[in-house]
Length: 408
Ligand code: HEC
Image (tube, rainbow, N blue to C red; front, side):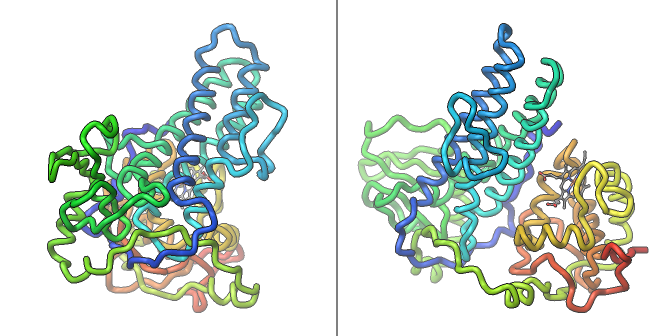
């Protein structure tokens, strides 16, 4: 199944620097605390499953309980998948609850794409663990739990080996998620003058400590220098951010750490329906959609169905998909992250950038988005602003009875 080393690069030349956001009056847990809790729960799930897989003497009752404990750690006690009747039942929020809370804000700090990746990998892990709970026999258990482990390893991330924003670890190592509540911060574009964290537009550039003050963490630190009598740990994101500092010197004047913003008040149903009527931005060319149809047939149709209506996997076009997209608040950026990072589910990252772009064009066309003159970009981290995936106000073409627009 999914290989951890296939994790897609989400950073690139086209990475967007989010507008800095003012401090919120933070009565809720800090983003650092939420991220640490989310990571801790992923680790608990991994060690619980591994212990069950390695325990040669353990019988069905033990490994089924282990899979359920892992589910609990991920989903939290308010989720229907939670079951309190196992040892170490977990807590109220669970890893996914913490990740959702971090994503549930109006700002888009740089960790957002990484956390979308974490989210979808956790969802897939829970689905496999639910299979593991139902498994009859050790073999079936191991097949399901190994797949869950692969998803969880991607969700956990390996900053030393993979892209700087790989999984929870990568996001924590390179963004404001690293900064404990109340810790001193400074402009990440400037050289460190005192102990603390150097931040620029939500990215962590450096962490300055007194020599001997802490053992240097193995992950997340790309280089260590002695400056001003301090040890300065530079992140993997530092070179990219420093380049941005040099070219946007003026923008650096307004750097503030991105603070957790409480969820926005839910609008009324009427306004919400209007807000989710997608703007008909022309995001791809007709030629791309046509070649994307062939890419889809080869790489996606086996699971999602020839007409995109879902077979082994959910529908990804039409009324049913747009309901999911609306309730999950999918933007084109999120959809692009899901497809380029996680699909095809049995071999993520295996398509060429141009193939991913054309299959995205095919998905947009099938969801009745209009074609235009600008091709869909090949960068997995491309930013589509606030383009929402939803029902088109003026569909391009006539949707069939399932709400899918045919593509020729
Ligand atoms: C081996 C089966 C498989 C293949 C092949 C596959 N997918 Fe998926 N896909 C899934 C499953 C299962 C899910 C649901 C995962 C989840 O909910 O965590 C999914 C989810 C998605 C979603 C999100 C749907 C939603 O409701 O959130 C999109 C979009 C998607 N796939 C697109 C693609 C594209 C494009 C391809 C081909 C490049 C592809 N998939 C290939 C199994 C597959």
